[in-house]
Image (cartoon, rainbow, N blue to C red):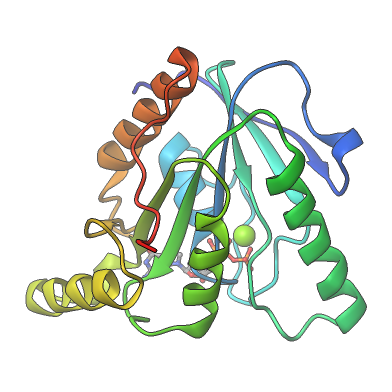
Length: 207
Ligand SMILES: Nc1nc2c(ncn2[C@@H]2O[C@H](COP(=O)(O)OP(=O)(O)OP(=O)(O)O)[C@@H](O)[C@H]2O)c(=O)[nH]1
Ligand SMILES: [Mg+2]
């Protein structure tokens, strides 16, 4: 997939704010600080289009980025971030759940896991919950630059086993700019599936 354009369109808290022009959405979710915003910037090759941060909990609203005027990449606030207040946390969780439940244009999900976190209860719960939504789910391991080849092989096997994934996740590094083509290829398959009315590839955990 060639990225010709990528623009921030809007932030949303409730359904009235979702883009409603009939174009498909691909959401990017994962724990706070896993590297969602960094991956989005890498995918569209626009450093700084999506705000990233050292401190978790930076992305608090659902942010919509229009790509190639053809589909939206959607930056979802991080799961499991405890340091925002309880009311704020509930508000964010409600906003995320409402989006997953109600957005008719949501065609697929990327769920990001930190390649070094091979046994995370937050990821385990989130993946089980997301598998309940009837749509393609692709698991992507971020921060691949943090491990060497052997550690990577081991981590991928552990993640696949721990979360009962049908396949090993793709590995990306926003620092080293690796895994970009592979992720874009999967997104293209999901979009093709949505356009043809059939479901694209999915890596949802096995029941
Ligand atoms: N080494 C390395 N660091 C990364 C990578 N991707 C992200 N980071 C770092 O991880 C931190 C969090 O990155 P973000 O992209 O802001 O993470 P996020 O998932 O959007 O975080 P929230 O918006 O808080 O949920 C930043 O310090 C990034 O520089 C990567 O591939 N490799
Ligand atoms: Mg973010």
